[in-house]
Image 1 (tube, helix red, strand yellow):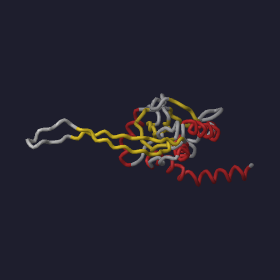
Image 2: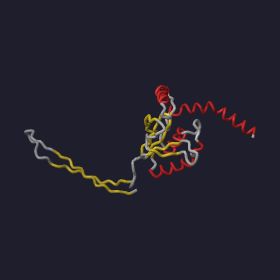
Image 3: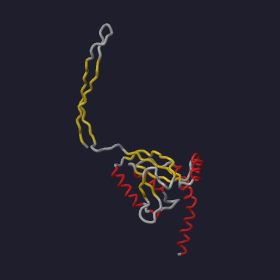
Length: 197
């Protein structure tokens, strides 16, 4: 941060009228102010963060389904977080991270539906990069699960770490409902596997 002393001079024209309502030559009025301000050198405006929403796959029946159920607050979607001109998504990979970086709105495996503004992050470009590298380590591709650990789960965590608004409920309503419905079965299967091993 740098302290800067600003000397502000305002020049304002002032016209005078004579008795016959004619304008005389303008005179000039000067006003001067001196102020000390603090200026953060290199500071940039906070960056906008968007949630890019896609229909899951490029299949026409998925697009048609989403068109019909979206007004009801549901659908099957793929999402990515856009910040600083790049989009970050999570998906299955047999090795390494499941986090990928693409051009915003151009995922070739899914039909782009639109973007939702999640607000502005106060993090710098370097801090966002560090945050996404941490997330890449925490989200290996082999841990992808269509119901419990998917692109929407990743986007929730990413939005939280970037300090912006959470995702709208409708984006991942179906996977959440499926997780709730299948949760008891997961527990039963885990207990069965433990019992039999």
